[in-house]
Length: 355
Length: 100
Image (cartoon, rainbow over all chains, first blue to last red; front, top):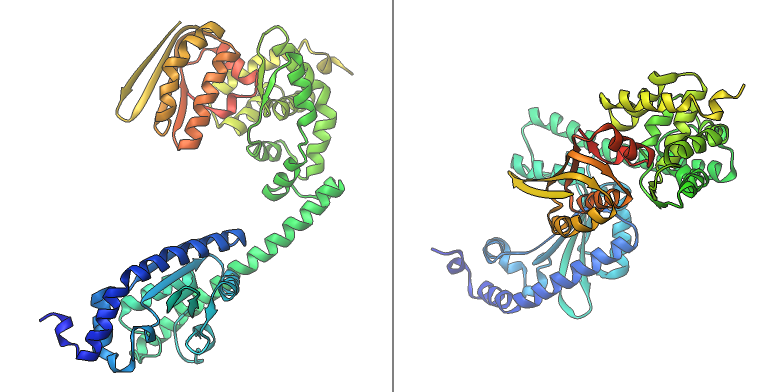
């Protein structure tokens, strides 16, 4: 016997209304999702995923069978259309909630912040649910907001067969509570780390902008900020001018490992290499490219020649140049050949022969 | 200058023979351009028989690299001689390609 046949006349009427209005729900789903995605993107909130679903006929029958008398009409069922927004960070759940409060009318009486209704001895790690409505759509809909970890919990929780608040065998209760607590702690720690990193980045950006480079430790964040100042522009332009070459911009992030590898501890150390090895870097380019008609270089050529000039000037020789290429290209036999060639060429360059 | 394209098991091998100078690069373009649509695959640029590369030749390699970057493919350069390796090095392009 189909589930539909088990329903009384009142529930049958609700079910028929659902069938009639299905296209309205489908339109609303498309529009609401588009609006949410656009708004959250504009607000700079990155979501792990956005999910939505319209309750299936089967699922609605089940609901009506269990508690159909509770609903006067289809409009009383708030979860026919459901949207789930999954964030990476716990702080972003509140940001998403604020955005939703601005976009839609929130039915506060039926919305639950399950995060706040936890008993001290209950287990679970739950999310924020809003029941919303919007102009032009005559039904309410539900939006769930949760982090990736809350989502993981919800799925695991569902899989165990025990819903929060339902009594579970005591021997499992402690383990489940510990796990929920751990997830909550991890979510909070992730957010804390993100805040601290943001503070650190701001501090580094200020130091870089103010020119206090000796005080800025060399790491990925500081190197990125440094690259925004285009520190190799001058040497690249000078090298390109040798053959009136076009400069192809490429990522210089691989040079972070190189500068660290040759002993740079702060951005000030890189700055010093630029100043002290500028002439040497230029001489290498003149020697290598001067007699060619090569009219294209990458923006990597400047830092490359600076590092080579620095290494040779410090007397690290072929081994040092090879090490540089190992850091840049990965360990390869051919790095030895290139290093040998450069050391040979450098013998004739003025910067190597200055006292 | 000859440019020969062979396709096998999800990868494309482009073999260059002779000097890849400006006129040769112009000749090679009609062979290379259709490969830009297939830059989601691994494209191997075999330089075993290549004796010289000019800026125009480098630009062909860079165009392929850009397409591979956009489409999630991979460009591998193989069998380059020391002179060509030196051109890649002095122009700062050595670390942009997987060279083997």
